[in-house]
Length: 178
Image 1 (tube, rainbow, N blue to C red):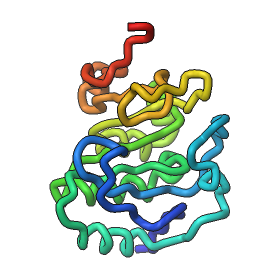
Image 2 (cartoon, one colour):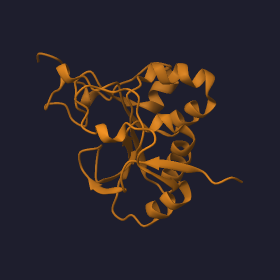
Image 3 (spheres, rainbow, N blue to C red):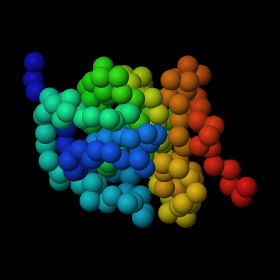
Image 4 (spheres, rainbow, N blue to C red):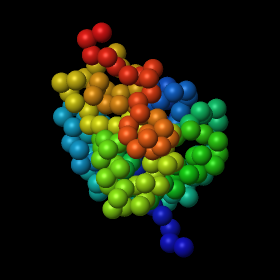
């Protein structure tokens, strides 16, 4: 079997409390073509930057984590590297941790992408919570949890796949003007 690699923007970040529920480790993927104006992580956009790492090496780092509720995949955009993302999400679940994933794609766009790329569908099946949509600077809001702009949704992926439409987690729904 060929070795699988992932291009990372930074080392694993342990003990985050701002990238999903509970104490989490964030894995920062390198590469993003969304180019959101005002992005908080623009250095992660270049697809050739960062560091190419064997997925098996990342798994070893995950094995050494302690006291983490789950893993959050962010970036860049992890969905530009679906094969590596799939392997890491499966491994995270195997260890009993939950999976959050940030993407500039919408859930609906990912469903469309999945029609052409089976791996995208498999990745969705392994994500517990998806924070979807591009960051929009004119919708930046400090009142929304776990995202930068209120257009971004926090989605229960298992429920959404059953219903074939995005199901937001109610406690995170932001009601504009309320």
